Length: 180
Image (cartoon, rainbow, N blue to C red):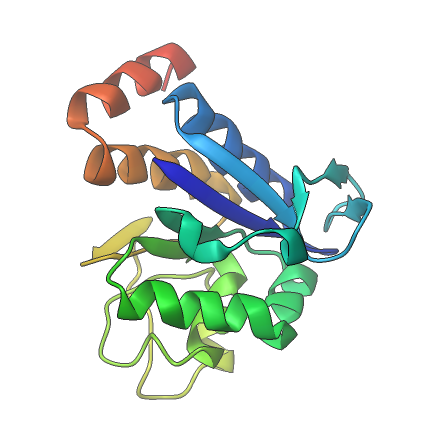
């Protein structure tokens, strides 16, 4: 599987790194694409370096699109025309996509949450329309959409991705190696 993980200043570093690392342990080809060139300042001051600049990749060359949360990064995803289009394109093509935490706001901005089951960081629902509300669950899968609540659920999110879109055996193998 080829996974695309965009990052921006303010992205939640634990969510980003846990997704990237766990999927790479499953031998997925993960590309981290920075929305701005150079070093990304994550939400807690951790410096992240992307594999590529967003402008140099074609999102549809990937099998799965995954957005980490973090309010600053989420706002960047909401305002970035390329990320917004990629979300809509993945949904229309029925390719797997998803997010953790506040990044549900970016999915909502792209118009893909209406009528779908999803979850997000508790409190984020206050910024969503009353008719688009999350479930209170660590991970929610609705067809090709997979979502999770926050940093503490990032491993479960990544392992659920592996189980759903790769194999149960691979997910179990990675889980055992992580001592989870």
